[in-house]
Amino acid sequence: MTDAKPDPHSEPDAPLALTPLHALHRELGAKMAPFAGYDMPIHYPAGILAEHLHARAAAGLFDVSHMGQAFLTGPDAVRHFETLVPGDMCALAEDRIRYTQFLNRDGGILDDLMATRWPGSQSGEERLFLVVNAARKAHDFAHVTARSPELALVAVTDRALLALQGPKAADVLSRILPGLADQPFMSMRRVAHEGAELYVSRSGYTGEDGYEISLPGALAEAFARRLLADPDVKPVGLGARDSLRLEAGLCLYGHDIDESTTPVEADLLWSISKRRRAEGGFPGASRVQRQIAEGPARRRVGLALDGKAPAREGAEIVSPDGAPLGRVTSGGFAPSLGRPVAMGYVDAAFASPGARVDLLVRGRPLAATVVPMPFVPTRYYRGK
Image 1 (cartoon, rainbow, N blue to C red):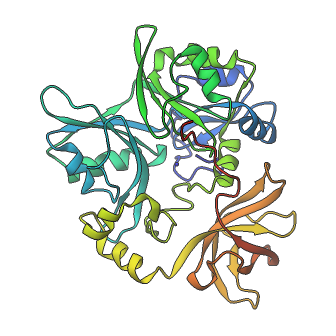
Image 2: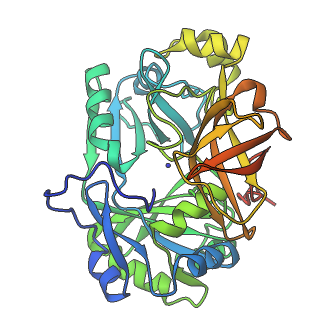
Image 3: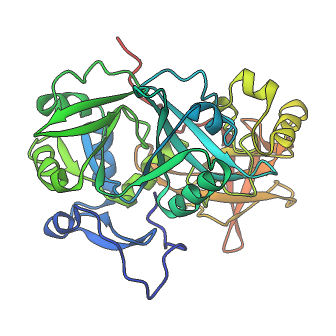
């Protein structure tokens, strides 16, 4: 759910918002650029390749404070929220996290998000903690408020969000916040630290084990400096965040998914439980159920290119005899593999692993093979 590409959501003349770590990014020598209305680090002096490989080998620290955080509260809030998304929210246990999507009436994806079921309050009200994409947060919050006026949505604007990702993330964080090494994947814990409450989720956007840490903005820089003091931790910008999520086969909103794509087409059916597939009760359910039963006309697939030249977003995908099949939605060099990879939508007849296609780059066909995703195996913590 971030990208180093030119930002279509930033107004050229609009002042950029700054995260609580902005001064630290400058101090560390980051190359900054607009993203989702914020001045964000693209990479640091070591460069995107080094940052990418360090996150795969040890631990990378990402500033994702531009993401939207909010609490949704009210009587029967979980059931009400479930009517907006295809995810099984009612079966979600307290302090567990669900990946899901806001859908429009045609089943198109308005945004993808993480939703945590917060412990119930003494008043009997239910609460959900939402984390949504930076460029869509205003739209998402307005959408929820309009569709669920009986609930109270309060955007969290005074907290930063840090992501610590990589195989050494658990060891690093446990040296500062003991007791988190055994925290399950896709769960939330609240931890007291220096008089404040931190929301620590075991989740991320790289395919690696790791955490996302929501904390008061006033504490963010000191906490980040403490993490960076560990020799296993290096700062990572949006450039490597994009290449890491591409290797993990993870969607980027506005590129791989948008209002024209459904969860079935986007290969996100795993995020819809059997109950919700059968019962529906969410926007666009009829189309989604029809695609489940009959199969969609197109699917998001992984593409491994034969040569060394990459294919970027927008490249046309054609059959070996030149028939148009779709377009690349994300593509680039995969540092962990030493080769270019891509994602895109193709006609369902060409969506099976092993299918051969060509990607047109400046009119030149680049041979590629449809392959399963992720391109690099994920290493989420599943318990010992």
